[in-house]
Image (cartoon, rainbow, N blue to C red):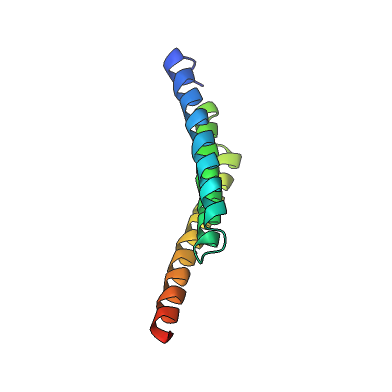
Length: 100
C-alpha cells in the first residue's frame, strides 16, 4: 500500500467524482425511465458505479487478491450484459420504426 499525499488526494478525487457521476446518472435515469433506453441507463449506472468502486479498492489494497479477481470477473460480465442490452434495444427500436 502506497502512503503518499498524492495517493490520498487522488483517492479523494476519485470518491468525489464517482459520487457526482453516480448522482447525475441516477437523475438521468429518472428522466429516461419510461423510454426504451431506461433499462440501459440503469445498467450503465450500476456498471459505472461498480467500476469506480473497483478502482478505488484497487488503489487501496494489494491487486492480486481473490476478492479483486472475483469483482473483476463480475464487472466484465456486467459490461457484456450491458453491451448485449444496448444492441437488443437498438434492434427493438429499429424493428418498431420499420413496422410503424
